[in-house]
Image 1 (cartoon, rainbow over the protein chains, first blue to last red):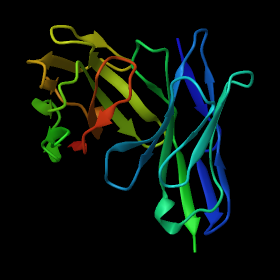
Image 2: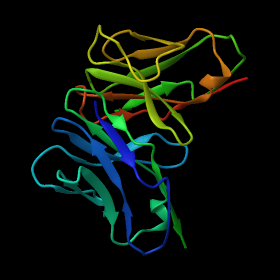
Image 3: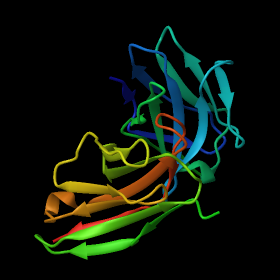
Image 4: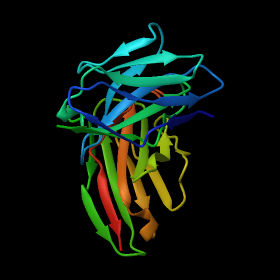
Length: 112
Length: 112
């Protein structure tokens, strides 16, 4: 079975500073990895995903994540955050034919 | 396309009452899911349906039943609501199990 650990439950950061949200997973087979974002009182939206190929994946709003197989990690980064990035972020893993398993979430608070 | 829709958006029940949460998707997806989201717990899978005609238990199925009515619709029923079922419920769908999931806006349920 797969599992996901998001190492930080809350991350406060000043506007225009860089941020890293950490995600580690556990699986005995090859995995697909996802980051979702949830804005207040909304459902989850896909931010980016790794299925295969290049280990660095990017989103349209400046986030990127790198799949590191040896460290079983898929950390999310952004070089300069905006107030509008304030949200909860969820890392998820799938073995390919099983439902996604989600981490407990990291609440990113961007401070002006 | 509406994507994934859920009804109702809000509901208040008394302990012991029953209700059904409705979910529909218009993306011709094969797989559908029900999650609950509680503070600090992330998303926990209640039930899922990998394809029309099949349903399987997730992590927290006790107290719930589901029906995959057709390819578009997947309902969640609480037969006898308990305060522990106070939560936000999300429905999601994907083309196949393990693929990227698309989420509905959620149903906020309070059981008194």
